[in-house]
Amino acid sequence: MSESVAVSAVRVAVVQFDPQVGTHNRQTNLINSLDLALQAVMNGANLIVLPELANSGYLFANRQDAFDHAETVPDGPSTWVWIDFAVQHQVYLVAGLVERDNMRLFDTAVLLGPSGFIGMYRKAHLWNQEKLWFTPGDLGFPVFDTPIGRIGLLICWDIWFPEVPRLLSLQGADIICSLNNWVWTPPPLFDEAGKCMASYLTMTAAHVNNVFIAAANRIGEERGGRYLGCSLIAGTNGWPIGTVAPADEQVIIYADIDLSDARSAPIWNSLNDLYRDRRVDVYEQMLGYLHHPSLPR
Image (tube, rainbow, N blue to C red; front, side):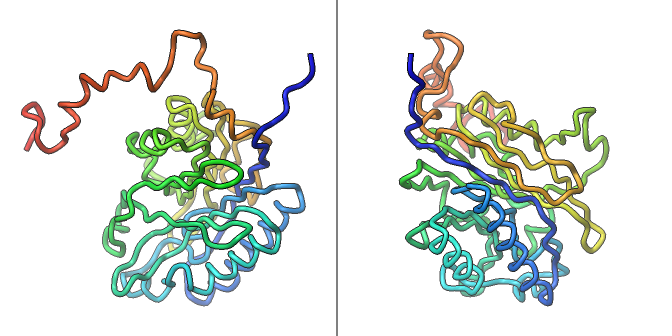
């Protein structure tokens, strides 16, 4: 029997590096992101995922500091540089930045491709002091239909909310690009396999939604904060494809996948179907989060 031919063959690369906060570091951060993205291109990647706030670093001192790092989308300088890269190399690039929309600031991910700007997502769930700088995202959870497949986006803390990957997968996402600044929290931080809790949340979300997830985190320290690394690419069965990145090394993780597999992912036997088996008739009433009588007001 001949081998099956991939319908939507993609080499995904997640880039783990150390962007540093400070307006004086923005150009260096941007150059580093491009250098690493170019390395991924030279190794055959055509979908490249950079971390959350890849051009600015993360730990802002106050809202003014965050505002000083902000740019408009899609006509800001970093987005244009990333667009030029995607067009020049005919690849898809996902990157995070601080977006300025009039006086509002958003923690935003942009999706760029061979023809330019495709779309963006504004982080819906804000972590800790992010609530002091950013406005919660107001664009919902879009999925972008591209020639290589349907791409969804989420950012960091979003993965702790199972509704997010579920909503993306229900809209037909073949792959979710997860942009992160996973920070050190009270121990234990890692298990014996070197995975952090965010690794398992990513793997679980991929597993229960039959979707690929490419999660790019950062490393390093800045202003007293530390980052967990552990970038990974999870298959539709939840298990990492290849290695999970270490906690403290700049690295690029690759996976060769057929994105169309997410549309017919195996679910153990012919009687199981994760979407069909959902009991929406039971959930419907209780998922009225603000109105169900069993829920606290």
